[in-house]
Length: 102
Image (cartoon, rainbow, N blue to C red; front, side):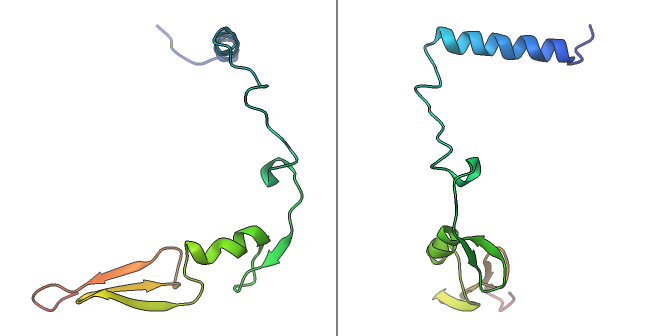
């Protein structure tokens, strides 16, 4: 049996999904999408400039310190454990082993 997805099969699946959602009482009125409230849907944004020169939405820059290191830093949260933040996309953790290796 050939299970290749053709456009006709895909379209029938989409129509069936729409009918099933309608039968369940799901409508766009219940889940409205406002183009005015989302920058992903064309809402206006205020551009800002990140320390590395990147241009992005100012709201992202305003909250960046809550989840990311803004400056390169080395933290020592416990003996034998170091966290390097702000040197790349994700923090790097170093844990010293009992024999002194890292």
